[in-house]
Structures are given as structure tokens and as C-alpha cells.
Amino acid sequence: MEQKSTVFTATHGVMTAEVGVISGELELRTTCEEDGSLTLAITYVGAEEWYTLPGEEYRLHDPRDHEVVHRMLAAVLERP
Image 1 (cartoon, rainbow, N blue to C red):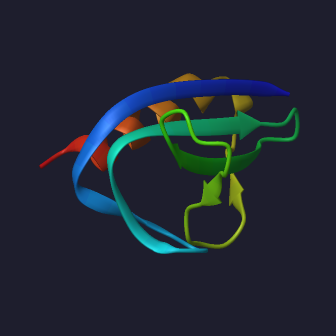
Image 2: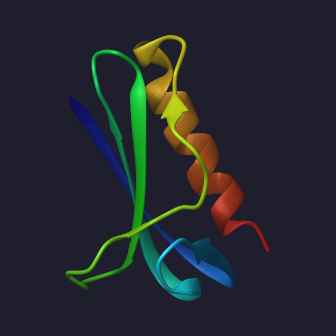
């Protein structure tokens, strides 16, 4: 299992499955298992509660792509 984390500012918000749209200073955490299954979670910086991003099961064809996919997600979620 490998985890990546990035702090970013979401000015237009990020949709979560549990509470709807959240915005402000957020932290994205992606977790990739050896089989390529990917978990996406987001929280307010410093908060204890994590939320999931909507969607079905996420899976990478190659777990070595985790770094690239994580950076891409963080960039897309932060864009104005």
C-alpha cells in the first residue's frame, strides 16, 4: 500500500459523496494497493474527518502510475 498526500486550495469547491461540495484549504489523499485499486479521500486541512470523492471503484492498470495520477488529480481539483 502506498499513500500520497497534497494540500491545495479549492476556490470553486470539490464534490464529496458524504457532505456535498467543500472548499478552502483541503488535503487530497490517494491510497494505491498492490493490485492497483485506488482510494481517493479529501479533508479540510487539520480536520479529522475524511470524505470520499464520488464515483465507482477506481483502479490503475499499473500501480506505478500512482504518483502521476495523484499529481493530476490535485492539479485538476485546485484549478480555478
